Image (tube, rainbow, N blue to C red; front, side, top):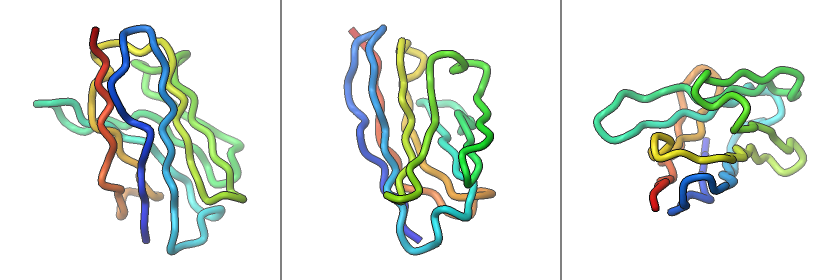
Length: 113
């Protein structure tokens, strides 16, 4: 299993970023996927989850209305569109397969002026 995140970087408050997770080594279209994040000095937090066929999504209260999780099963890729970013969104964002047995290495998002 390979999960490779990309798209992180430095952005000003109020800005947007789109994270991608490229998956390989398993049948991507059969599994639910999630984004987690870990801010400095804090525990890992579930950000959003999407079912295998995209018929259901779920978000942490802290990102509802600002973040959108989606996937393209033809490209074996999951995305996280992040809008109206806040300094408290600063964290390493991880792509996670299913129940959490496989994690990517993460991509750093820094929201700062």
